[in-house]
Image (cartoon, rainbow, N blue to C red; front, top):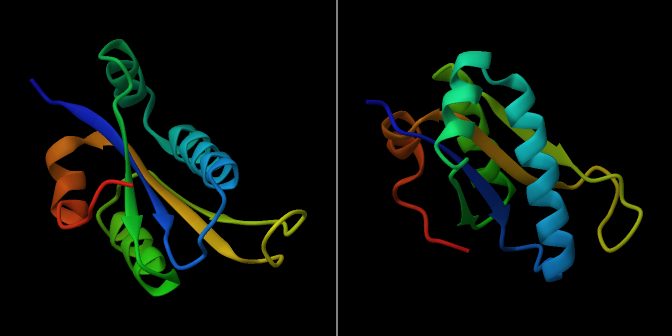
Length: 115
């Protein structure tokens, strides 16, 4: 049986307040879910919708992992903030990868630490 999960990556160099980081994670999660194949979404949902939030050091690492996810045909989203609160407009803040096969996601993100 395939296990599905989603990982959400949050930039640490921005030092986002907790509420802002949570909002960016939520944006990323929803956007990536909308890109997932329906059968994978349904299986992920039926098994508890596992989500893991991980740290990335900066925009370079964030965008690199986003590109790798796309290159591996994984549903992924990159969030660019509108700049209405604590950061400048256009700042890339978060990425979500999945829901997708846990093993495929781990190939890209297993080296990262939990938030």
